[in-house]
Length: 75
Image (tube, rainbow, N blue to C red; front, side, top):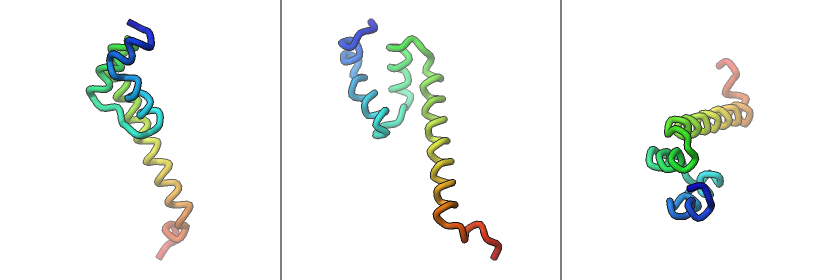
């Protein structure tokens, strides 16, 4: 069960595309389906999503500090 047709049967083709495009997050249901298809654990996919979200928050926070240096100055 590891060819492109099987991926479409599981409705993952569009879901994977949306994840890669940043349009969809990996939730528990998607993690279960990805784990089943790729033979990995659900935890792997959920941890991957958590790391992605953490990296996005860190990047956003750094960008905000650069855009507003007065935020770092003592009042």
